[in-house]
Picture 1 (tube, rainbow, N blue to C red):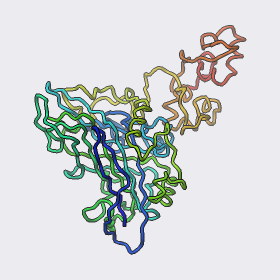
Picture 2 (tube, one colour):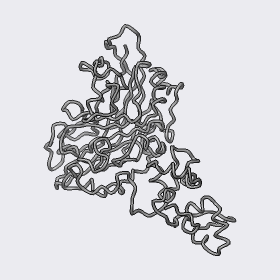
Picture 3 (cartoon, rainbow, N blue to C red):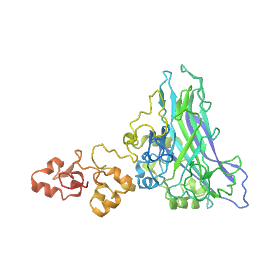
Picture 4 (cartoon, helix red, strand yellow):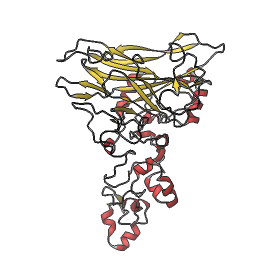
Length: 446
């Protein structure tokens, strides 16, 4: 069968991936198998010491760099990811609300301080046998790595290090200076068909037999073939010398919490072959955030990613712990102060998020949920709605000083609504006014 090979060339310091090239590899099958491949591209959405797979109630052992929806709190669930706004995810495929994270990379400066490196660009390749691959079920999660050799690092245009200290701390990180480094790792794809997770978060899914992580045969203990994922993380202007991951080692690992709608992803896996993928698979079309798609011009694609970044995740409601420009790495699980396991600031200024749209729907705003009591009580059980609409959900109640509405061509606020009484009663009939001026309108829910 034809296996896609990712071939890299360099041009003025920018990495290009030419897709697709092919080589012929053996596969244990007498039938012709169509391949499908697509790629999701990301900027990092935040860095914080949490790990939603390992611990849902406290801070994790080390800092992680996250990609996807801006939901980095320990208690995040599959339901939270599916309910999030796809236009606030740091990825470019709106249907993919999965969350990916890995230990952050630190440069140890000459004065001993540690600087967290911001990834320049990250991509995740999905490769699969059409019609013979199973989508991850809802709430599926996994961790891959920890073993030396699981990940690779490529150094583009190596040059002598010019720092005061140029000795590598771990052999994974090169001592030389690089125009760019790329960390790559393939994730396991053979599932046991039963468990969405396992006690070690690893053993429920394994690599195929043999040396090749893609085309090998799945063992009988893990017979279900899932999509093959490969993650590539790039850092520009790598200075060489001492670097380490946030756990103090040179061993890479990565975590994955699926945020796909299982039926949609299964349709992709069943219908989009290699040829279809090249034309963006018209049978099951993706939609692209800010139109960030240009598969045959990656320089343009990366330019678009940086031109249309999403706001970074608001981690101040999770932890105020400093994660860069630090002497010592923040370490040890369940130490340090976790402000909120669900990312809701208990002492934050009380106001609804005026930009919140549940699942990206223009209709489903805080005003929509607060206007019907039965709907409000049911909807506020959802963490995403509760976090975005604290006034609606009764967490707090205060007039929003930022709120403005137009009346007879003039801008008005909650203070204007208060007096006289007949003005207050009339203005408070408006859904938006009573939603954002709940004290004035006697519309508090707590």
